[in-house]
Image 1 (cartoon, rainbow, N blue to C red):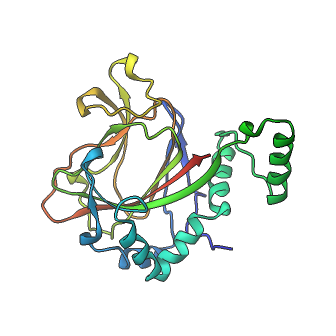
Image 2 (image 1 turned 90 degrees about the vertical axis):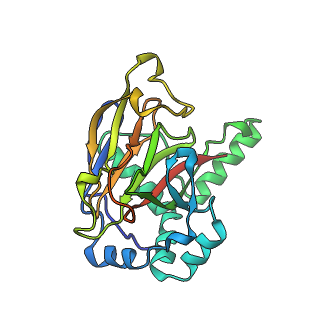
Length: 252
């Protein structure tokens, strides 16, 4: 069984306009340093302008180098194994449920899943099988000089997103920006955004900002109005806003 590498015990949520909150610290300091020391080099990342001014290394983007890097570093092998485990997925959902966010999923044993699926099949209701839950993570970087993430609400198949800051103490100047904004569309008729259309920064009212700081996790639940962004940053050329972005999502 994969070992838990961070904890959400300190997670504090706000509930309006959608559930979002902060857990800090997210890791033991020694474990956190191991992650920082094994961060992938910038040349492995793929530029991803579709969502802003951002670089990504993931299962979807430069996947060969992504898996090579994970296989060659123990800390990432352990992390990957844990993120892919049922214990991670259901652990996060249980933490949310304890904070009054019940997403309606029920954990079943392998035998329980088989029994349910056979029952639906016999009844001719195979289409009633609930969606499967899975998790993945990506390495993300935003340049301090202009890096940003366009306002959006996340794709419909996402359930929970976790953004883990990866920065050494004193490495990042808050004056550069880089905080994760909680937004509300200035036009109420565009508040409903189930299908994740993008918006302009000027379309957003800022309700809150989770500043980019070391050893923390910003967690939020995908909803019809979970607008959020990272506004263009104002730092020098060179430094990067590094994060692990973890998603729990559905598939059929």
